Image (tube, rainbow, N blue to C red; front, side, top):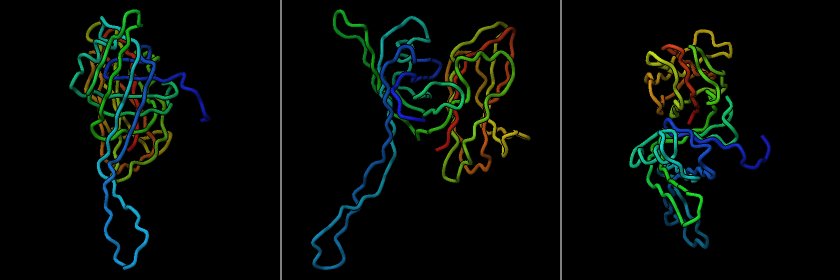
Length: 249
């Protein structure tokens, strides 16, 4: 991947695709710096260097864009409903095709601002603080592909999950159509080889019958290096648009 301008950023929160309603996105992650400097043991020290230890990790999302309301898929409805709560977030810096880079976390909405001066194109901006780790991974389900029958997604070569790290997965159900209660049950599976012989179920999301998001993690170690999404769909003429990502951190 070469240097690039930001032209194809995708942003998902819960069951909402914020992409067409946002025009700025910043992700940050940092460790606390804890001063661990002591007096030097030897005499006649003329130079003393500061020593530090790293403390707690924190992650943040800052996003802004153009305000709209009147439907659960629109920014005001989604952000107003999530005030003071937590939701799964997935950000894709270079599009959301399967295997594209994705960052994901569970974050709480700590600030939401909206509207401005006369004549302005109505703006919004929000800040979210992560709880737990922000993971880096890949898109496992492209949101532009309708899922109408039981199946599996693209195989991702993410590598093993070492002890002390976790497998992360985000799921965003963005659109549902059909009758007789269309339902999608989604899993993250792993395998030791790319052929995916004898896959192991690692994460199972709750069955979804309405728009919404889910976020789950699983502690390592996991020796398998290949991962995919699988889904079981029921209902009459069902159709789902689903964005999902899998990562390790």
